[in-house]
Length: 61
Figure (cartoon, rainbow, N blue to C red):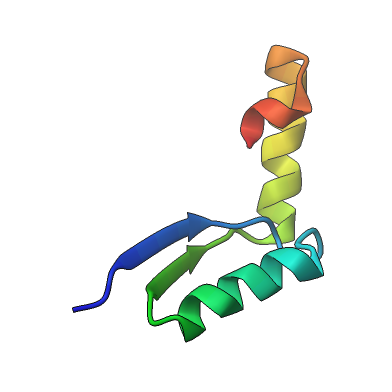
């Protein structure tokens, strides 16, 4: 039985090579990984709404 790791990722354009390598290493170590990310359009919309509502774009993340 493998452990299940669930991760909410940045959009592919914002994910660094180090982050990609870390996820790959976890998979190669035998962990089952579920990676969830939204499209870049949805990500931008969430950040815009958080900025207008809270004055802080990072609140969306």
